[in-house]
Length: 332
Image (cartoon, rainbow, N blue to C red; front, side, top):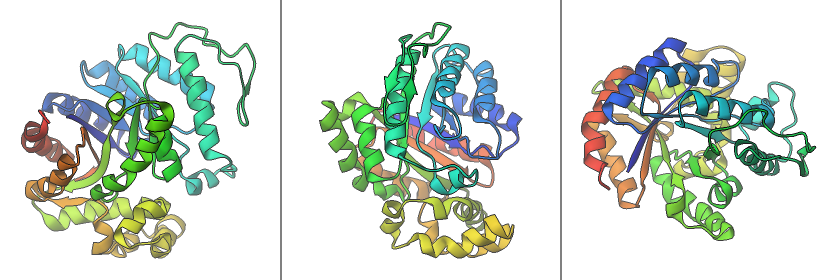
């Protein structure tokens, strides 16, 4: 079993180094940082982590080829892999249409754009020419890295929709499917397996992370408040496939979206998050966490990935997972 932590890029930059060092000491295998728009830059944060840690792998969750050109994504990936001495993983996907729309960009052909970008980036970090005549990418023979990448950088595909989940199995080295709620793993796996069949591969050939949200604390009220904040920010952008698991729709989040993103009423938005919405993640102490992880372990999950908010005290949450969860599942 692998274990990883995922963070949003909304914290003070220096905090990530502290948390990454704690995660490395606690036995985590990977440390991921998102690159959501108008927050802190994940590549910069990961460069700092690379120089402050020795063993733990680092990665982006995720970069998108709309706001960053795939050629520049390849440059970043190869550079961060060089800096970290082969510990970088590139998390990539199309991003959320709503957020891309903030920039006035057309969210066109997301699946095609991702597939073509992955093929091109793989060529570049394999030190090959990446000329392509795709539907989106039109690169000439001059498309190649002018420095030698140390290896082909592993690519993890972030996904929520059925078609993108399928591409995890077909073309990626790993997957970052969002399991909101955790029990959603049963529903995403068939889509990944369809892609594996198309790509002539088996599940053991990829690193499929079970990506969950958790807010860990013995103080139930504080734990719920921390998770409610994340749900208020992101809930409206989740796919119908995810929300349907809880009997929710994107329309249920519309008042919350307006309050948070348009009116700046973050406290009001948090208050509108319901107990039903909180089931998107895991809230509470160790017992609550273990109770819902057991189902994932029984389904054969081989990589548990814990995401924000993690709790009102992030360091305490890292210590709890390292003490109570990692030893319990390490040999599975």
